[in-house]
Length: 339
Image (cartoon, rainbow, N blue to C red; front, side, top):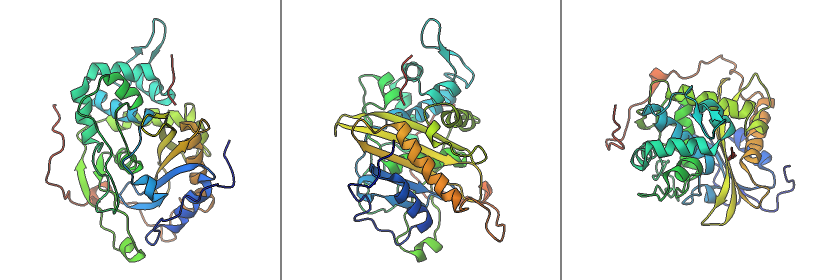
């Protein structure tokens, strides 16, 4: 149940001169009385359209909880540990394939995948996907998350995110890459409408993943909204949302965490919406999914996703800008539920 009448104004200190104000109003309105942060980005360019509670969003980060399962899935598919249809037995009589495991956020399944992958491969993929580094380009105050160099239990790392610290910007960058088919952009945050109008996307790196890896995990992310842990995000079957929830306790802050990273797949405006909630036991991934769903619904009611008056086409993948980094990241070789 959403709280009403926010006790704390999450917008204090935010700079909004370069925001898409329609998106910002929707995000501020729908986060309600929860403590946390919302980041909305354009996955085709890496432009941050709005960032609510910027101080929190730019901090060192929090445990990613089950959102880390996206990393585990992409690593396991690329390394041929499983295919999307491989049945993995989590007990004598119960098994999951990847679509089911992502939708239901099954911990045992991803613990098994992590154990099969081993720490070195998990670390390499997490690094390639942007963990442990700044997601933004020249965003004042941004701090990178933490990707540990060792882990006492790789299975806990790949199912709960144990040992990892992630910022909402890092998750937004990862979700943008999944949404756009495999290009990791630098996130950029315009500080004025003039900067927004002259925005130039900049690519950090293309992701070296299995040819069908991203499409394979999209099935589970759609399942999470249709029948899994993110059902509260769904509002219209004609405007599908794909996403991944995360619920756990951050050991450093002793705060309950509720994550939901998501994107939409139809309309003239494709968005990535990341909701990170912190607080007491009323906070969870499903609650964060409900907040995100309300943001999409709010924007839909304003016809935000409709084609513009000129019928302008969406940007094509062939229109991608040049990569601006010259530093290689990560050379890669050819039944409990966590919400």
